[in-house]
Length: 293
Image 1 (cartoon, one colour):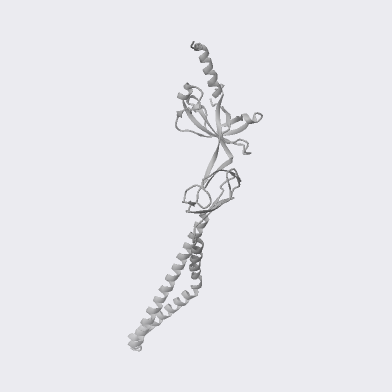
Image 2 (cartoon, rainbow, N blue to C red):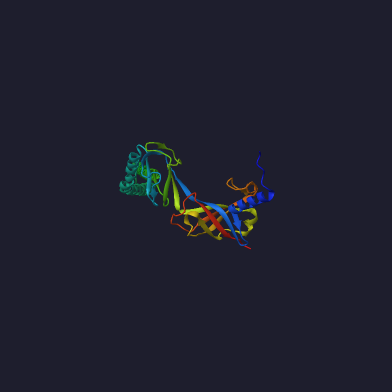
């Protein structure tokens, strides 16, 4: 015999109970279900290289500035030393530049005086030609020395750029957290921008929740809220709304009733003031939002 369907009144009551379990409110407070999330940071090198050392594994705690991984480029250290040597040549040629400038100035002055004397018939044409040749040679030598110094300065800039590449091969933790995922193994060649590890910033948890369209006008960013978690029944956490989605969406699949899944909702992001790390990622919570008039 087929089972009889419950009376309509009982079905409506059951739906009402299920809806109340997901979202309840009084005249001035809205209670919604949410989930604790943490920010995930994926560390990637800015230059390609071979993964030489991986100092942290999944589940390890890290502090800001800790070295997570070190990559290498074969021949990079030798290239840095070569460019440093070229750059150091600039300092040794400073005296040579001053001597070349003095010689060029002296030759130009001698040539100017000889030209005056030549117009007066005192200096010979041979003397004028000799001084013109000497002045041209001194000016050419000065230009050559100055060009060499510019090349040395360019080598210094190249050495600094190469050293910056070496710095980009060292991955440092940007914040306190836990290594969530390791994407590479030692010895692998990692391209620039490819993540090596993912770090969860556990000290900055937040809650993802959804509110119905009819309540969105009664909440605003900055609104202080209270958060409760089943694992800490004797504690209440505080937080504030940091973001309200600018676009409506359908209720996520976790909604309890078919009617709720068809309703439009707005996602909200709630920052949690507690930084002790007690609230873990994925933990379900209840958020009490005071509604604005």
